[in-house]
Image (cartoon, rainbow, N blue to C red; front, side, top):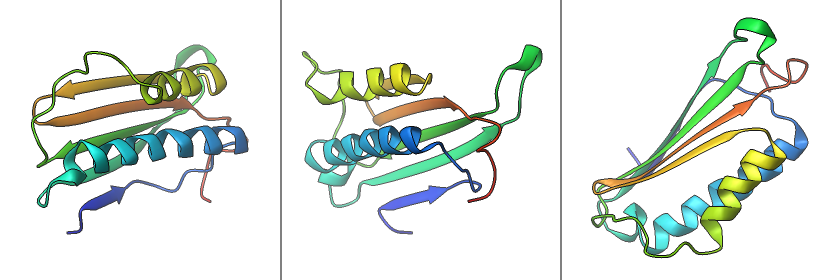
Length: 125
């Protein structure tokens, strides 16, 4: 297995969601390379996503993306937040209507992103 693994079903995202998600993943990758799992020889990143079909009361289907770092140096919550974390959280929340949970667990950073899918744009790419 390589240092970065990705696994999930095909998903079609709206263009604005694709751009914002790309910026968020770039921010996570940059931080992993500088300070996290990818800064250590044995470190790795796993990115997995799943689809949740439409819920009750007309809730849209969702994609849940989990970014998980392992094998890097021990992690602690930052004393102050830089430009990237708020950008990641606010961009996906405000621009895409998503939810972001960033966890600085000692064994590695985990970021959980939940994004609503427009039913006309959900499906195989």
